[in-house]
Image (tube, rainbow, N blue to C red; front, side, top):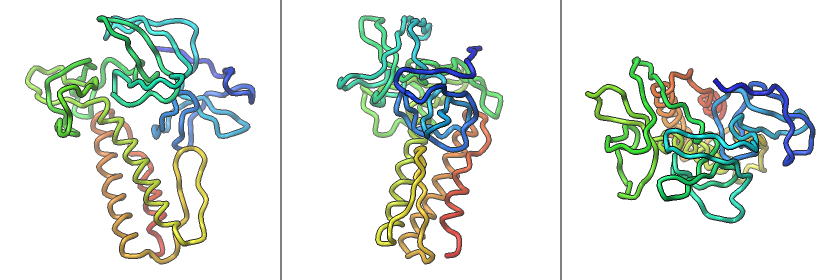
Length: 255
């Protein structure tokens, strides 16, 4: 189990110490630049809204990742290079780990580089992290993926299981929610005199008193999307339901 200091300082943020504590809201990590909706502990600035994944703390020491037999070193940013994470296939926009194995360069988001090798779902099924699999993902059903599609996956240890969970699909559910939430709130605030958003990555705009028929449909769609997302996360990782539904209920009040 990796131990983390309660307070740290990093060169890229000049407000002094960052404290390790539970976050109260979703945020954009100041290191990897990725959205985060898991309300767990992270490093936070007491003077501004800066948040940092524990995994994204800069390290001068390489670490060995046995899954791909590779020594990885921390890099602060891609420096204009267009690169994709080996684990989830998504673009690297901030800090990442870099290495070389099996004749090719390796790039990983810090959180992807430190994914647990084993998880257990609510049904007690043990899932192992694999670099490759031919099994069908329960989330996307492998639809729309080319033969070059790359994503690590959590694969049931049981030989009789015929499914998996792509790392990219689990991560994509979070990012899809972020996009839908932003789009919905922008539509609601259009022509209503503006609104206010939080700076931690979850844009929440106060709606007008009366919702149009189109606005109601958007909110109903959000409500359904939230329930689907919570079911997927709860099934795969055994986490309690995330509080996104509270945002939707607040937006739908006083219709």
